[in-house]
Length: 285
Image (cartoon, rainbow, N blue to C red; front, top):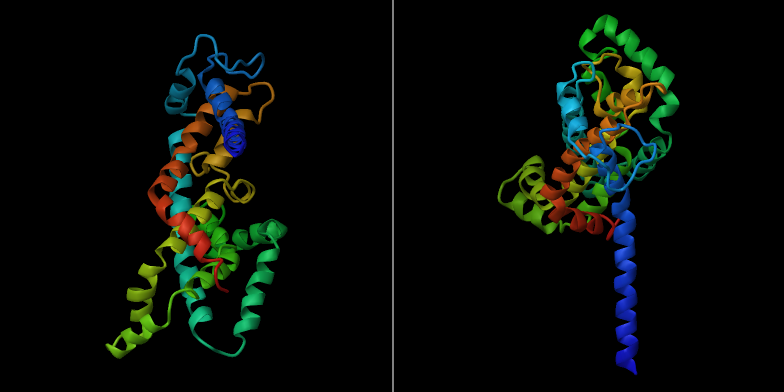
């Protein structure tokens, strides 16, 4: 009797798992179908398109009006630089909160979290006017520049990340640093040579989260960037479907598939650190 119940339970679990997998993969399959559809429209779209071809993919690399390779490179470059600097700043901010005792430590953590509650979109007008004035003094950081958008992204990248990394650093024994101090290491050397290598899982998690957030951001990028050669992928893709009389849904789908490759590759490179980093940061606060 118990064997029959176990068998029924196992069958039900397998059916449920395959339904979840089908539900998750259906949008991807439908997007691939639209990308292979030479009709370049969503009207009468079928799961298996007729006369499937790579026309939409070729358009992305042959059209100069919509330079998809440049948009893709801009997004990867901006996301990588932002993520690297954000992780570095977060590590330097979280380490003192985790290891040192100083006046205002607890209040400082709450202030960081409080600031993070208010999204950057609330300050869009102020941010635009700020960089409008900055470009008169420092054109390299003015409107329609990548350093400007990177600076804006960095402004909202420390709050929650600091809390998450502090929780992970709290799980690393302080005895390791004390042993390093005995051997003559300074506080920075102990942080750089002992703590950072042990904190690779949480560093990888923060890097991936920041990369995805920056890579897919649209609103701020569309406000700051106004040149076809400076657009990020999110802003550039909108051009394919912004005109209701010349929508290019097939090209848009093809670009969306190719645009997802950098994130997939990044996940594959750091996947062994992600689970450990997320769990470790929630153990001790």
